[in-house]
Length: 92
Image (cartoon, rainbow, N blue to C red; front, side):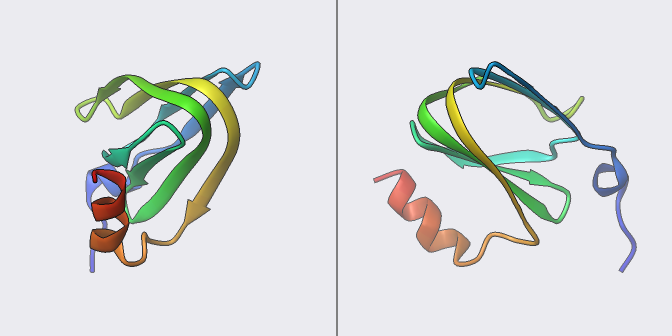
């Protein structure tokens, strides 16, 4: 399977004082609430954890994501397992 241009895009992460996170190379924001933000970097999941999290801006065209809040963790996974069940719980 060939990778698309979006999957080949480079990814950069800047965290300022654990309050502002700026990321590039983000393909999509799959879901979010006040404690987690689920984004995709091609076929890799990017999960931001914390408190009072807010997506300030996201551009699918440029791949830029800005998040504000108390950021406790950043986690990368090969994929989001049980995707439907996970997002069903987020949006209840």
